[in-house]
Amino acid sequence: MSASHDPASRRCRLTVLSGPSGVGKSTVVARLRAVYPTIWQSVSLTTRRPRPAEIAGLHYLFCAEDAFDAAVAEGQLLEWAEFAGHRYGTPRAPVLERLERGERVLLEIELEGARQVRAAMPEALLVFLAPPSWEILAKRLTGRGTEDEVVIAQRLARARIELAAAAEFDVTVVNDDVHQVCERLVALMESVEDGSTPPPDL
Picture 1 (cartoon, helix red, strand yellow):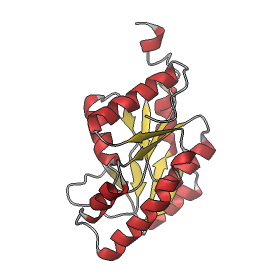
Picture 2: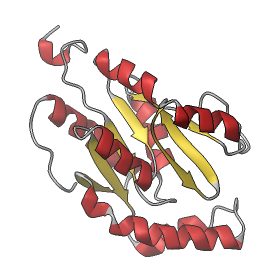
Picture 3: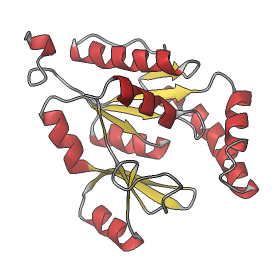
Picture 4: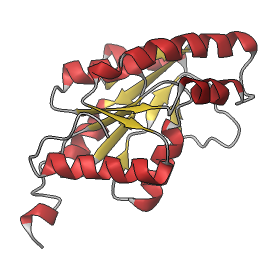
């Protein structure tokens, strides 16, 4: 096995995938993990209650407010943020352990969390997942059927702010085809490991 394909010798770099609510981050990550199971996705800690079909430990680590407070106070989280009345955070230790082993690590997080990761780990690769158009994004947000009108309005307002933050990221990838987006993400990870500079947009 050559050095470029040996996990222990690869210069792995944390990859962060973010973007507005409804852009399809979860769909992209699910597809990516199905095709490339060696890419490790961090499981977020959250104070939100499980949604139907969500499995604790697989989709999220669900916890009470006081447990989340303790994790923040003890520095156990790489990043955390509040979204739609609930808090979400990334446990620090598992991320660092996987990177040290030479594994590819992917975080799927919101904008504020991505900014915290940039501050804590400047070497991380930040990828912004953008919708093909605002109209498509708005349709996705209003067509979920899982939130009331007030929450949907909040999501739309927040999405406009998040779209404006794309310039803060290293690369912008348009989610026009899930399969192609996954291939682009893997290509970005490989370019980083090879020491080349990824293009600003894909």
